[in-house]
Amino acid sequence: MSHDLADKTLFLETFGCQMNILDSELVLGQLARLGYRRTADRDGADLVLFNTCSVRDHAEQKVYSRLGELRPIKTARPDMILGVIGCQAQREGENLARRFPHVDLLCSPGELDRLPELIAAVASTRERAFALHGLQSRRSSTLDRAREHDALEALDLSRSFSPDASPIQAYVRVQRGCDKFCTYCVVPTVRGKERSRRPEHIVAEAQMLARAGCREVTLIGQTVNSYVQVDEAGTTVTFARLLERVAAVPGLVRVRFVTSYPGDFDEDILRVMADVPNVCPFLHIPAQSGSDRVLRAMRRQYTAADYYRLIDRAREIVSDVSIVGDFIVGFPGESDADFAASVEMVRRVRYKNSYIFKYSARPGTAAFRNQPDDVPEPVKRERNRILLDEQEAVCQQLNRELLGMTVQVLVEGPSKLAADGSTAVARGQLAGRTQADRIVVFDPPPGAEPASLVGSLCEVRVREINPYSVVGELVAVAAPLSAPRPAVTPLGYKGLTVLR
Ligand code: SAH
Ligand code: SF4
Ligand code: F3S
Image 1 (cartoon, rainbow, N blue to C red):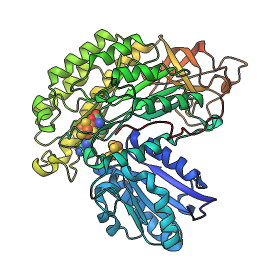
Image 2: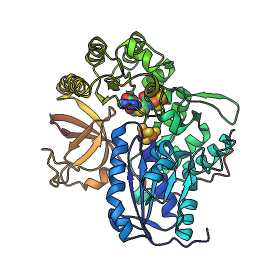
Image 3: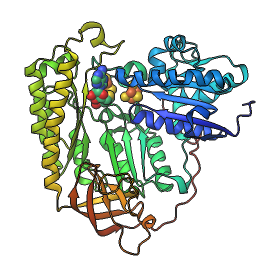
Image 4: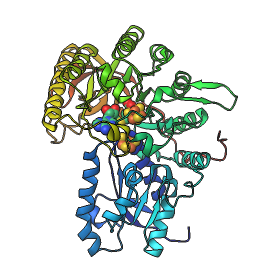
């Protein structure tokens, strides 16, 4: 790049799911290599980026208000570069640019490898620059999907960590896009068709992370269990087999994955979970509704009975499995009886927790076109509250069962919350997560340097459960972290062949 971009500041705010969190990390790495330092001072930054989500209207509204706030700031500081990247940039495209003329750049999730190029173009020409599918995109006319996949692959593999700044937990993408087309959902339209990544690349990325000191990897995909790809030897690798390969990476003490799609769920995955000790007994497997009528209208391709059967099998094969769900309340046509079936599901499945959303009609989806958003807002709100209360009751029950138990905690660092939930400095306490992804706070052993336990697996007895955290006492340090963390360089892309 001819342009010297060194020594500038970047403000980046991320909305949405794990895919966006990972994309933001890649963007930060990409821009750090160009000399951008991250800042918390949005209004004083040289480059302001919003990595956006379109899954519900609320997430998009937040971005509009941010962009509104930045209008006068951009007038006062015209050299600031303001960009919207991610799913909303793709969904709204030029409409967003028209509504917010002070936005300098737009970039789809599928074009993020081009972000440095866009920034350089804006900086040198002061013209706006867009990289969107179906618009001024090198991939728009023929939609060269293989090239897109390669370019995004290179971006994924460009990831690097310095050993002193490496996180204990990290995401690794196993697939892009989604083919399910649930009628309410924008993801397939903004993220494109489902493509599974090469198993070699996924494993190489997990190895790089482990070498940098990362101890837990979360494999991510919109329907992670539908992963399937052929490896270099020509062997078909299903998600269960991929899970085994990642779990075998030296240094990884935990592997988990999100999000599972309940249709066509392969029981082999459950067997790997039961047999491989570092695969967490944890399933995030959204049902969305307990009513067959609603599931059909959502085009979810399974019935409530299928779902219950799957949960029963999961509990048979993996006795201590923790189950997390998602529900949408107020889907078009949802009756009281339909909703009651969702309440029943929360009760019967006993989710560790559920993410509960009020239906939001999204332009571009089948439900938006064909199904009037006919459940009134107050009814949606009421159903949301009822389901949350139901889930809360389940949580309290599960919490009571947890009291006095000894859980395995992967220590992530100093606790941000004191045991009483206040944000006051937490007396050198440590925080980590259980295999079921619960945050546990505990005191380090007397005389020990708390930092020395970061990255260790500890046995902690649960003493107290409060609204903000689980508090416990250290029983034993199961796996101390002894090896020094070596320096790690980005993965070479060239050494790995990409399958088309
Ligand atoms: N791929 C994941 C979910 C991705 S979106 C899966 O299928 O499980 C995350 C969650 O947002 C969904 O599980 C759903 O509960 C919710 N969601 C998606 N579209 C929505 C909409 N239009 N209104 C409300 N909630 C929605
Ligand atoms: Fe959206 Fe359905 Fe795909 Fe999940 S499976 S991302 S809800 S279309
Ligand atoms: Fe949102 Fe895009 Fe994820 S729409 S949920 S950020 S894939």
